[in-house]
Each structure stands twice: as C-alpha cells, then as structure tokens.
Image: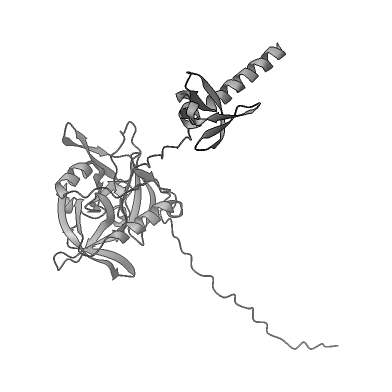
Length: 336
C-alpha cells in the first residue's frame, strides 16, 4: 500500500511538472514538453528531464511557453491571491459609547437634515422647567446641560419616535443621571425604562473643522415650543466667557434650547447650545463638541451618585496649621 502511494505521488508530481512545462508543437502533429533553455534564430534548446534536445526551427509549428501551456485550473491555482480591501465602516463607536463618521457625510440642506435627525432630539422635563437634549446611542444615553437638571431628581424625557412618516411623542420617566460636569455645564442621562425601543442617535462631529461663517442650525424647544429649528452661521469659534471657550452663533437660542444640539450641514453635532445674551439678537453660544467628547471619554471621572449628589467634585476645607502647645516654665522652689 505504501509503495502504491509513493508511485501515485510520483505520477501526480510528473503530471504537474508536465502541466507546468513549455510545449513545442512539431510539424508531424507531435509535441514535446520540457523547459526551454535557449531560443536561437535556427533552433530551440529544450530540457526534457533526462536529456537535452536541440530542435531545428524548420520543424517547429508553435512554441507554447509555460504560462500559455498551463491548464486553466493550474493557472488559477498558481495566480497570486490579491486580498480585496475591506470596506471601512461608515461609523466608528468611540470609547465614550458615541459614534463619529469615518468619512465626512454629504452636505445636505436643513429640510433634509431635520427629517433625518428629528427622532434623536428630545425634550428634558423637570418640575423646575424644561430643556433640550440629544441621544448619542441607541441604548438611550443622551446629553443635556447640567443647569437643566441641577438639583432635580424627577426627570422625564420626551422622545419623538418616527412611525409611518410621522413623529409620535412618548414620555419616558425612568431616567437616570449617569455623569455631570457642572463647571462645563454638561450632563449625561440614561433612559432606563423597560421595553424601550432602540433609539435614533446623532453623530458627533469635529468643531475644530468648522470655519467662521459656516452654516449651522439648532433644534430644540425654546420657551416650550417643541421641534423648533433655527438657522445661522458660526460667528466665532473661540469666544471666552467666564474662563471657558464657546462657539458663538447667530442661530436663535432661547430658554428651552439649553442642552440641545447645534448641527453642521452634514448632520453632525458640533456643539451644545447653552446660553445667549438676553439684551441682543443673534448672540447665542454653544459648548464645542470637543469638550463633549472629552466628557464622554472620561465619564467615569464625572460619575454621579445619588448617595453623593455633589459628585464628581467635592472640595474639603484645607487643614489649618497645627498649633503648638504653649508651655509655661515655672520655677520650682523646694522647701525643706
């Protein structure tokens, strides 16, 4: 049995060598296979394995080189496999559980973008008032301003689910505070309600890529007027106010817009609207999305705990200098 296997392997090897050899077709309809060692004007030198033949040119009809003589199956098997480059995903999920676009989305007009983004912008209601927010992933995490939920424990979120081309409002009352940054006016909330569907989410863009004069728009609920869209431009990207840098925009912002998204014309969030100058028009401000990404990427450092609502920052009074005890020396007089 072993001998038969060796013979079979040898025959296969010989057959493969023949398949890979050069072939010379002769006038008498014969052909010879081997490796061509040299080609001259009057003759071809062919190595057939056990000897070398010199074949006159006048006897040759056609010369088939190795690449031409191989069977198609052999040629296909020997062809180098060129890997097909993988198509990069459109979106990338970052450490803070939000998504960004790997390639810039196409520019669209406001009407198209509002229809696409309507589900992801929400109202945040508390007993003390209301604000806006936006959902950053399908599990129900959303961003709003800290001042919208400051001091509140009863928070509800109104989401506008799209059904049959219409937006249908639904209020979720089981809402948890996940993290807060009161100094930069940001809060991360989570809708924990059972049987909640997967939520439509926004993409976070790059505020550094914005240029002054670029068109932006905001969606929110100013003065309780839900689903209000305002359009404007970026007035400046680095307006310093109270020690922080903000984007200034001409998009109209009013109480109720707080915590809502400021979008570029690609449908990406580039800022959180959070304040305006009340005695002027077209003087709105937004927190740059770069600060939002930092907050989300390091949200464990800003974690909120119901047991300690002062999280994440709690400054203790510095210890006072230790007072040295005063020792009064007394003269001791001995009496005998």
